Structure formats: structure tokens, C-alpha cells
Length: 442
Ligand SMILES: Nc1ncnc2c1ncn2[C@@H]1O[C@H](COP(=O)(O)OP(=O)(O)OP(=O)(O)O)[C@@H](O)[C@H]1O
Image 1 (cartoon, rainbow, N blue to C red):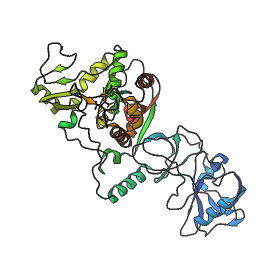
Image 2 (tube, rainbow, N blue to C red; image 1 turned 60 degrees about the vertical axis):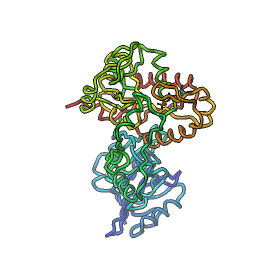
Image 3 (spheres, rainbow, N blue to C red; image 1 turned 90 degrees about the vertical axis):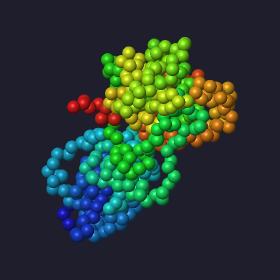
Image 4 (cartoon, protein in one colour; image 1 turned 180 degrees about the vertical axis):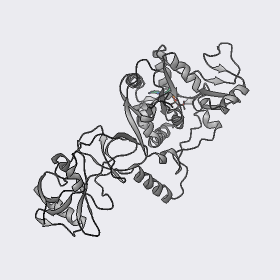
């Protein structure tokens, strides 16, 4: 049989290509060449080329598994006889470029590599990835399987990842095949009732966007991202701190602002409670009537709001804007589900997850810590440590795709210093953000 002979020196068992079989003729074809792999670097194999012989053995009529066996058992130089695809041989070989970078919003799906790609088993390693991972997609020519590298790149060789549509149908399949489960949304702890942070749980029924098949987690399995550096003339990015109740989110926020009040500031919350003699409107709170507060609620002006002892409290998006317009860095401390409504082109939030150290470390470091409810010091931390640790893990598992950075709040002083430098980097150095945040509004 006519054909071109090409040699590949196999140092590993994979030449970096997948094959497919024409079921009618039994002919074996190169299905895809993995970007950066051996075949790609050699420039000898192309998708569509017919594989006629491997090491002198004809492969026509063989099952792909049998061909793969021959390849796996081959060491050193391997001899392919191929009939080049007419279209390919007439075309100029174009180097593959990075098509897009994405962040995985769901999963975990493929946490082990390699995997086999239907319909034919492949010799290609899959990229092991999980939720929140960054992937550099280099080939989307196949509707089912894309080629990608995990960022930061440690290898030039790409691997296969499921395309967005494959992942979506897998997600749906998995969601519907699961037995009815107890709702896993994170619940607040009873003592967790910070006036401007935790109150929203008391009042509003929270809808969970990740526990339903039509939720946002399922509609976009990958989010296209790009590196972004804030231009100096633009507002600072909003800094969001999230963490389990009691982990120290508010303590860190307060310390940060106290350390440098001309740089860091929190938004001034609104309340319907009467003003106290030592207070000043617009400083501690914006004191407003119940009617105005409810009007603002109806107009979706609050990021979070709630009720305490018959009075309403809330943090408005205007209050956040006020801080940013003054050229300061706005630090907010919100419930994890509120991240979704704050992820906007205008605010370009940078989300820092304040993670709990182990319960043993919590016990050691929180000896003087107090559980605070409505400005009244209630009691010391007693047996809450494993609860804080568990809740922290739950939040991380559920929302980590939205976290830009994780900070363990172990030693308070250290955590505060680290937080400061993380925020500075977030404002001054390139960071991954969704591409949609960089598009100009129509
Ligand atoms: N790293 C730390 N070491 C020691 N104590 C800490 C540390 N971080 C926070 N604390 C203390 O733990 C207690 C709870 O912290 P904080 O009020 O900030 O919790 P929170 O995460 O905002 O939760 P909540 O909103 O439910 O109050 C406070 O007494 C605080 O001073």
C-alpha cells in the first residue's frame, strides 16, 4: 500500500495523538494531534491522515484498542506509514494559539488522568482539573473534547478536557441521577448576627444558584477569563472578604481599616433605628425611615440587608460606590452567596476567602476571642471550633470558583499583614478576571 513513512522516537508511551476508525471501511485515521505533544512538535502527523502501518504491521481493519496496544508495546523509534490527508497536505501548517483561558465553575469532574475519550479510546492524557482551576484552551476544533493546559503551565503539552457542551450534559446527567438530597446551602450559625453582615439570613429566604440544574453553576461550566491590570486612573477593585462565621472576617476588616483609614474603608450601612447622641448620620450609619429603606429594598439597592430587634439594616451598592469614588479601597465582608450579585464589570471584585485554620489551632489562638451578637459581647468561644472549621470547609467547597485568593486566619498579626499585601497586589498587579468584565457596555 502507498504511503509516507514517518519515524517518531517514543520516549513515553504516547505519541500525542488520538485515532478513530471508519466503521464502514475499517480504516484508521488520526483524529487529533495534541498541542505541544510529540506528534505536534515533529509536524509529521495531522488530523485526517490515514494510518496504514505501525512498525510494519498493517492496521486497517483493527480495532482502535488493538492499534493502541501495538503503540503501547513499542519502545524507542516507532514507524508509522501514513497517507496524508489531501486537505491537510495542501494547507499551510498553522501553529495553534491560545484560544481562550477559562476558569472551571463546576465539578470536580476529571480529577484523574489519563482518561479515555469516546467514541474511540485515546492515547491521550486528560488534564486533571477541578472546580476553580484555570485552563488555557488551545484547540476547540472538536465539539466534544478540547485541548488545554492547566495554568500555571508546567508542560508545553496539552491534554484533553471536556468541551463546555460535553461538561454541561455530564453535569445534567449527574444532577438528575442523584437521589433527592438534603439541601446543602450553608446555613448561618445562631450567634452569627452581625448587623450589617449576617442579618440578611434572618429576613430573606436565600435562593441557592448552585443546587438546581438551571442554576448558574450549570449554565456556564467554564468562565472565560483574561489577565487584567487595573489602570491607575480607574477606581480600585472592590475587595470582598468571605469566611465562616467566627473565623475572624470582621476582625481582619476592622484592623485593616484602622491600620490605614485613608486607604481602606468600609461602606456606611443604612438603618432604620433611631440615631444615638454620639452618632452622626453618614458616619456610623445612614439613618433613614422605614419607608425609604423598603423603597430601596424594592429597587434592589442593597447588597445585603436584614432585621434586628425590629430595625432594618443594610449595605447599599451606593455606599460601596461612594467609597470607591473617593479613591479609597472599599472592603466589604459579606455572606458567600452575595458574591454573585457583586460580580459586576463596574466593581471587578477581588474575593479573598478567610479560611479557618485547624480546630486545634483555633483553640490555641482564640483563647481571648468573643462571640459577638448585636454589639453585645455574649460569651467566649467554647466548643465552636470544629463547627467553624467545618463551616469553613463547606464554604470553600461550594464557592471556591469565585475566590481569587485564600488566606488562613491563624495568627492574627500575620493574617493582617498578609491581607494587606494581597490587597495591594490585587490592585496593582495583573489578575485573572472574567472576560465579560472587560467588554465595553453597549
Ligand atoms: N487570628 C485570630 N486570633 C485570635 N482571635 C481572633 C482571630 N481572628 C479573629 N479573632 C477573634 O475571634 C472573634 C470572632 O471574630 P469576628 O467577629 O471577626 O468573626 P466573624 O468572622 O466576623 O464572624 P461573625 O460575623 O459571625 O461575628 C473576635 O473576638 C475576634 O477578635
